[in-house]
Length: 236
Image (cartoon, rainbow, N blue to C red; front, side, top):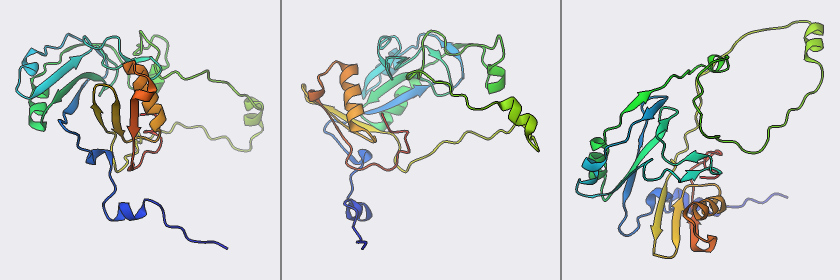
């Protein structure tokens, strides 16, 4: 016999009492924004941050020059880069005490770069002599890729009653959960508490502890409710 069970969080969600990361407000909360590349590949010249740092309400402006040794995702990729490798690559981060101050600081940053050769077609990228975008470090390499072979493709094609050959393309597909990626972090001098929209609080805790050089027992990651993830929030 089947019995109906009410989801534990159902009432909180339908009544609007459920707390998500964007609902968290810590004392002395600062807002942050990422300055991103507008071009697919370029060597970024040193960013002039003096004007932005001098603005009222601006607490910090950081570039690759400040965080050159800080990496993420199995120590493969720099947090901030001086070589843009895609449109949207992270070049600088700004923190301020209000949205208005944050917007003024971002507008005051002057980002310039020396364009580099690139291709945006996957077929052209596989051709001999195609420009290499990810030079200087490995990226998103997790384990070894094993190759499995089963059967003889040439024989199967020769014996097939019909063979259809074609090239098919589709626009990029990106899922959009109701709650975007986000984090609210507080530090009391000993313990780091992070409210993060994530599917894996322990992975985020371990990653923060490793990056910041903290014991894991001095970090706490909380996800009370999460508005969708679909795998994109598996580790961050």
